[in-house]
Length: 230
Image (cartoon, rainbow, N blue to C red; front, side, top):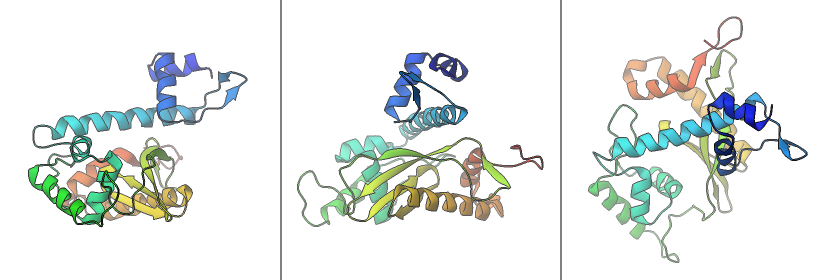
């Protein structure tokens, strides 16, 4: 299908659709100078829109109780991805109020991050956590599960961050899942397996993990006997 038709299906204007494609580096094949769209490309656009909406909701929900991750990163002089990975590597306690459990940085948690940064060996300014790189993180997508009885509602957007000399790190912020590997393919495969393993673990006792179960049910659905998603 052509761009105008794809935009109509998604409820967007053609220029809005192309902007999303360029911002998220979604690869759509071309026939001479025109894009040729398939349903898989539309799913990637939907996932990119959903991820941006999630980020806005995170910022809005965190503001009454603390700073969102992006706001805290700006105050600390770090990128969003660097702060997210650093907090997890250093196991810094950050409040996560509300049903979606987004980070809400208060003065205490900001102070703990500053202390952890100050304890790192001297590095050129601005200071950056160990193991991270100045290369920007990329958005990638998990498109399927390693088990045929369940399926993803839509491709799941994850962040992939290059690590110097060691490979890549992928993260799914909503569930605090991360994976490291030598290639992008490796980290996506490992994170996909972690996502499925976490779903199986939480689904056996969802009452013990109500917030995670809410997120997981939004991502994963059982397939019907006929093969369609339930």
